[in-house]
Image 1 (tube, rainbow, N blue to C red):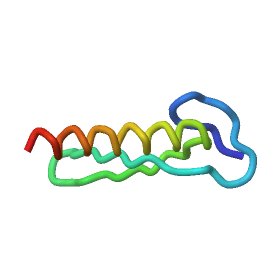
Image 2 (tube, rainbow, N blue to C red):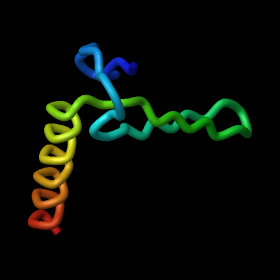
Image 3 (cartoon, rainbow, N blue to C red):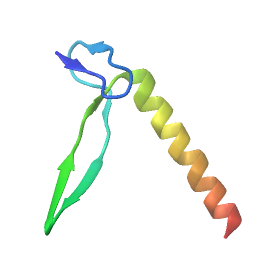
Amino acid sequence: MHECDLCGVTIEGEPAGRGLLLFVRGDTLLREEPPLCERCAHGVGVAAMKRWELEDEDG
């Protein structure tokens, strides 16, 4: 079982998606891919697409 990194809901089975977190610690790049439930994975995807569209329009 997993727990959604955004909302904390318990995920049974495989997560619907994963986030991507990058951290720099000195000379080391740390990468985490926390699990996301279906609702949060969809929300993050839609928000990313909208932001990309806005940036594309701004030139």
